[in-house]
Image 1 (cartoon, rainbow, N blue to C red):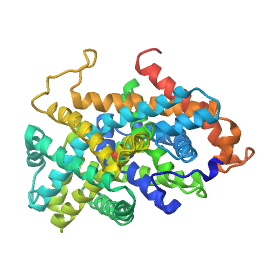
Image 2: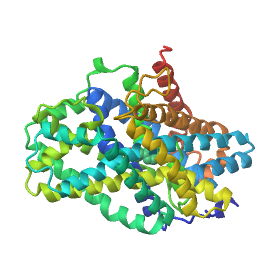
Image 3: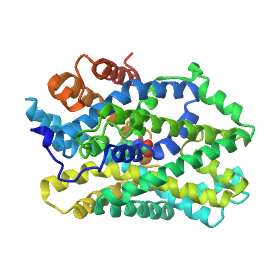
Image 4: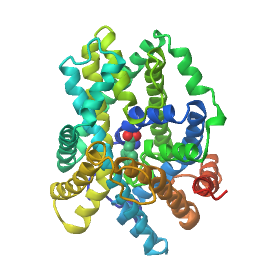
Length: 457
Ligand code: PHE
């Protein structure tokens, strides 16, 4: 019976489209903005290594689990978990996992869309030729001019969220499918071009050294927690985005196979982004640990000096905006799908309600970079609103969501359901490896990292 269940929101036209959409969700600011800045802040190679381990041992099995749950339930994460829990004879409270994901999605999107606004601002700056011959210092001033201005930050954040609203309101299928097919490969090609440029800067050897030679003396509990959080963030895991995309996946598609593609492309993009950005940092003697501004200060410098830098710069920032948009819509989709399921509200109205709420939180995040920089919402966390939202959502809610997903799928659901939805045999290698990772490795890793980071051992 569940095999013929259909999603009221429609389906992807093929497994390939699902891979593209999920890759669109995974590849975004997490790869091109967050990954490089975290590598820079966390001291390089050791962080990269721990991150890769988290992707392989924790992220990949959990992605398979999430896609499987989505396709099984064919609904928004909240309702899929509710229905599956009922069918499996489990507590209806499992739907709280879906709710937690919606909260995490709101928090992420509120700061994500602030950064999305920056990419729009940079696209326009590039178009006006603002980067031609620019030095590192000047690029720093451009960035400061942006984030120090409450009006600019909020204005561009608003523009970005409006774009998301229009697309999600229209329904994800048509426009987006096409955009993802053509534009993501273009973004990737541009990144490769930037790496080739990086090889000529004299900073490339230092980059390889920095990114791939682990120095464990700089690793502490926070480094490991950050790497784990980034693994979830970059793969869009732990909050239902991949689950809801799985709900629209054709029944005949192999879940482990598609997952391998998504994880592979996401990881490659992050590594390539690092290889493109750090040569500039080292060649220009910039500071790798400068935080959120890293990409926005380094890349204008390259576009200002390379041949065809004007065209390439415009293209790059436009494509970066697009990559952020394709991720942003997947952050909205779980909540929007849920509202349309339970309220009979039209999709456009559901999207309007969700984006309005997130817009408001985003304003707070944006203002915390300038006029509200002293505001602290949580007395026990000395972080501004932007940083706090980023920390709690990525480092706590996503790994926690992933942990509960793993427990639900590998400890609570019946083997029969799992096997039939994954279309695997219980004695096959793929199943055995996946089950072991989801049952033991992923939960243990998350729990250990949590305990360690609150200083428990
Ligand atoms: N994976 C996206 C990125 O790397 C961000 C994201 C996180 C999207 C969580 C959906 C869910 O930019």
